[in-house]
Image: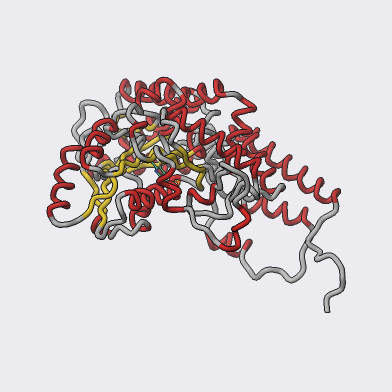
Length: 477
Ligand SMILES: Cc1ncc(COP(=O)(O)O)c(C=O)c1O
């Protein structure tokens, strides 16, 4: 029989304050020292396994010691995605109020599942979703929810599409050859057979070819398959290309096919006038996924799914359960668990809301615009360089380029070898971090310029280094 005593899983107020203060100091030091730190750090499994593996200890150790271990051996072994010279994949630089919001939400132990359980953060989610609705230009019928990210938003969008299309047998989903792997995975989860996920060829500017799409749809209908959704890119991850949204919407309306837009990377460009022009037509889509942990400066996981008619989400996801019968509390109180996959949900709206309240939209707008402007300057740099070549139009803030001296004739395998070598040198130099992509089979260096602390000097120094390493690799080859 257990004594009537505490479990032992609590700390005294002094211990709690001490640990939180040490963690806060470490975070502030890290963030304020980023510019002088490497853009990347990592360690091999053989080393980390030794240091961090093993069975859970039967007896604990002082919290200070555990924190030290985490601060020294765990957390520094990571890409510094918020570094001013981190341009790899899709970076992210969260603002401090957003970080604090995640801490508060954990400490207040908020489960943003239903209005009864968390009315405060449910209201913030309604507020943030309404901001998104306004930025997109969606009608009053629109709504949505915050998700873990673009992958979850895609799954939920395609489940809604399948339901709206009558849940047919043999569904087919269309996307371009530039679409993110998250969309293919989402189609599979939504019950589309692998062989019925169509990758429609893109044109020379990496935008979906609508004629080729319509040919494929006609072919599929003729063989008894059921097209349910077209997934367009609004900022493809390789080049930032934006599919012809208006033409796709016209086509999908005529054909009665759901149009989903993957704006996970590019969506928040909408808050600027320039971005709005690039993304014109997005408001015609049936659903849109966009990630605040990319171009809206929030900590992971801050995705969103918006649908033009909110009812479509609730048609799929609203499920009663006996144990939840008390959660219907008050009139017009939405339960966000009725809109997506998760019942227990983090209070994601808190970080977005707190950081916008703190800085105001004009600062967010300037920070997004800065990414667009820096990418344009980087494009000019590449175009006027004697040694660099632009590989794709710069639509948003992705720069695809490679080392290829102007006027020279080189075969593709030679160029790939040189550029791979440049990337390796950049990697080991550690001033900056960026990655590569494959553009229809051609190797390309790729910089995604997104972080709010990034300046032209950061971009220029990185491109200068590429030039220097490129010349060296060419001379040595
Ligand atoms: C265009 C695009 N779509 C979808 C995703 C997947 O989003 P998440 O990583 O938030 O699940 C990404 C991730 O980088 C992306 O760039």
